[in-house]
Structures are given as structure tokens and as C-alpha cells.
Amino acid sequence: MLTKRNYLRQMEALLMKLNNKRLMVALLSSSLLIPSLAGCSSNTDKTTTTDKSSAVTQEEGNNEIKTIAAELKSSLKSFNEAVSNKNSDKVKKTSEQLNYQWLSGESNIRETFPLLYTEIEKYMIPLYSEASTDKPDLAKIKELAVSLDEALTKLENAKETEEKSTAALDKAVEQYKLYVLDETSKLVSSTQDFTNAVKAKDVQKAKELYVEARTHYERIEPIAESFGELDPKIDAREGDVDPSEWGGFHRIEKALWENEPLDSMASVADQLYKDVLQLQEEVKNLKLRPTEVVAGSISLINEASISKITGEEERYSHVDLMDLGANVEGSFEIYNAILPALIENDKELASKLDLHFNQMTTILNSYKKNGQYVLYTELTKEQIREISQKLGVLSELMAQTAKILQ
Image 1 (cartoon, rainbow, N blue to C red):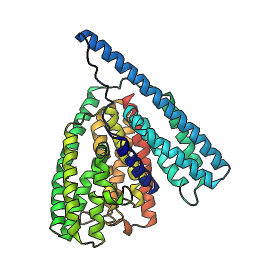
Image 2 (cartoon, helix red, strand yellow):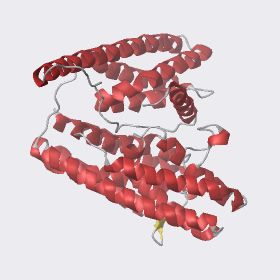
Image 3 (tube, helix red, strand yellow):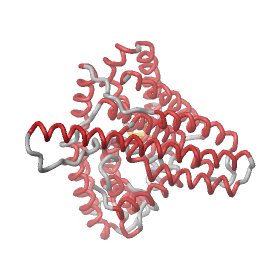
Image 4 (spheres, rainbow, N blue to C red):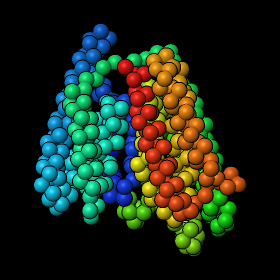
């Protein structure tokens, strides 16, 4: 469990990320733990008491989430009033309050209603980002606010029910878990090669291996983000954390592409490899639910369409298309896993997703030279806009896959 100090640190880091328009999504978290009870006189009594405790805890959790939803809706109302009055100072102030409330309560929502969490994030992040600009697009903000209010209403009225579980969904979870284990193993191997090259001060080789290691990480990003402080340690960008604590991939990225001496990167490389090994151990014990798997796929496409397309992820190397492509690949892997269940439910949606995943892959492949993506800085505004539009459509379609859980 996170300490209060660590939790606040993560809050600050998330706020910074959002100011940079980066989508920090941590959808795949472990189930809520019910405190065990001691001192029961018999197995029967113990079972009964535990069941009652679970029911009380669940009820308290649902009530807390309803309270969070009501508070968010109240803050959104104040925000909308500021927008209507065209009071730019108050727009920023109320958006900050709304965002802070969301970050304060999102972990409970993520664990209990992961799909609703994803839906709210989809509107909350761009709304806050737009409101934080010097000249916010009020029409765009109003449109996002309407969708956000609808999502919060769903959350306010949501009831935690037993998840739908079918043989197809169970197999999908099992299949995806094997994919995650394989990708994590490849991440460990490629990160070891990468960090060895950094310590050997082989800049060109380290740059090449950086791309490979990052690809494996981005494919399973929702999984990585679910393990507390591991994701910031591995994947934080400059400004996301305290400068004295900044390490991981992006710290080394800056050193490599900004021509910094690599002597000081040896300890950073060693820590990165240790953190990736820890991630692998955590993944081995991970237990996934169908809801989390589907939400993870939606999250990857949302992140690609909202933040990766901005070119702000790889600010020194400009290999952002690699991140974007890996997110799409990770989402497609989940889609393939849930496809049998989706076909049972909606063949037409499955056909649309087949078409749009193929189109997205074709477009991304057109920006490869010698097997590698071109630099983000080589793209024109029109090309970026085309990719963004295609990702937006794919995001909307992937969101509809949640119906297989109903």
C-alpha cells in the first residue's frame, strides 16, 4: 500500500504530466483487498463474518465513489459557469480544482469501475489540457464538458455487480496474460542490452536498443502503469518527478540525444534494469479480470490518440511514432484475444474494428524506412492530422467493445 507521502508525490507527478498533455493511465490495478478477520470461533462463523465484512466494505466503497462523483459534478458545474461567463482566470482555477479532485479519487474508481474510469479520463484529460492553455477553445471545452457530465452521471448511478464471465472471456484473459508475460520477458532482455550499451558508452548502439526496449514497454503500458511507483521510475519524463529522483528511460534518452557524458548514466542504467526486473516479478503474480483487459485496450488507443500523437513523449529522440505504433499493437493484441467473445455479441462491430485496425497499421507502416519509423519531426501537419483522425475513430470503436461485459 502506498504511504501518504508517496501518494502525494504521485499526485504532483500526475499534475505535471497533465500540464504537458500527457495521458497517465493506470487502468490495470489489483482487486480491492478486504481486511482479514481474526479470532473467529469456527469456520462457519469466520465465513459469515468475512462475508458481512466484505459486504460492508463494498457498500462503503460504492458510497465513497458516489460522493466523489457528486463532488466532481459540482465542480464541473462551477467550471461550466466560468466558461459561460468567459472568465478565463476562473476557467483555469475551476479546471484545476476539478482535475485535483479527480486525481484524488481516481484510484478507487479505477479499481471498482475500470471502464467508467476510462470513459471519464477520455474527456477529463483533454478538457483540463485545453482549459490550461493561454487561449482555450471554449466551444471545444463545452462539448467535452457535456460528455464528461454524462460520464460522471453514469458513475454516480453505477452499481458494482458481478462481472459477466464466459468461456470466451476467460480464454481471452488467459491469452492476454501470456502475451504480457512474453512482452515483459522481451522488455527485460532488451533493457539489459540497452543499459549495457549505455554503461559501455556506445552511443549509437544504445540509441538503437532504446527504441527496441521502449517498444516492448509501450505494448504493455497499462499493465506497467498499474504497479504503484514503478511506472514513474521507469517511464517518467523530465518535469514529471523531482529532478533529483528523475531516472528511467527518458533520463537516459536525454543524455544520449543531448550528447551528455554517459559517465553519470551508469547508476541510472543499473536502476532502470532493476526496476524492469521488479516489473517482471509483479507481472508474474498479476491476476486480471475481463473488465481490466478490455479497459486496457481502450486505454492504449485513447492514450495514442490523445497524447502520443502530440509528439511530446519522446522529446529528445523524436521516435514518437514507435510509441504510438506499440500502443496500437498492444491494443490490437487484446482485440484479438476478445474477438471470439465480440463476435458472439456484435459481428458488425468486429468487422469495423478489423477494417480500422488494418487501415491504422497500413498508415503507420507507410512511415517506416528500413524497418524503422521515421522521426516525428519529419511528419507534416496534414500527416499528423490524418493519423489523429484515424486513431479517433478507432478509439470510439474500441470503446464499444465494453458491451461484451454486459
